[in-house]
Each structure stands twice: as C-alpha cells, then as structure tokens.
Amino acid sequence: MANLKYLGADDIAPAEHHVTVVTHVDHMGMEKGYFFDSERGYYGGSGPFDWRMEEAFARAERYAQDNRISLIVVRSKRINP
Image 1 (spheres, rainbow, N blue to C red):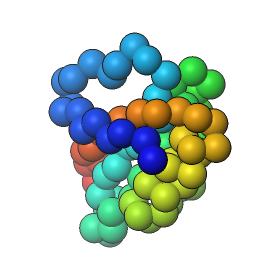
Image 2: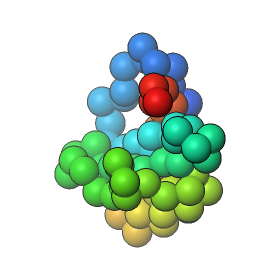
Image 3: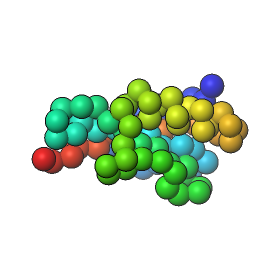
Image 4: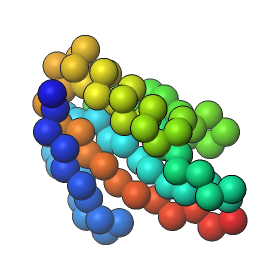
C-alpha cells in the first residue's frame, strides 16, 4: 500500500514520483474526485468524468500499486458553483 500525504491548498507537491488525488464537492453537494500520475500527467477523471470520492481513492491506490508508486498525495480543491 502506498503512503498517503495530505497537502493544503498552497503546499508544493513533492518532487518524487507520486499519484495525486484531487477531491472536491460538486454543485450538488456530492464528494467527487479524480487522480493523475505526476510523471505521466493526466490519467483519470476531472470535469464531468469525476468519480465518487471513494472510487477515485480506490482507483488511485490500484494505479499506484500496479505501477509501483509508493506515494499518493491528496489535495482538496474548492469548486465555486
């Protein structure tokens, strides 16, 4: 299992290879998220393709494990309706 690191809005992401999970609450009040690989760029979700937050975490963990990435960074994003 990868290590989790929670970042604040202004914190700088680590330089080491990691998966970033971006979470937010959509305009309907549902917790959503997407993730991406820090070296390969965009991977999954964002915009209308977000997953429920739990699924975004599960997919990010699976992706990190499959690709031998030892760090998952979690960042919350505020979406203004």
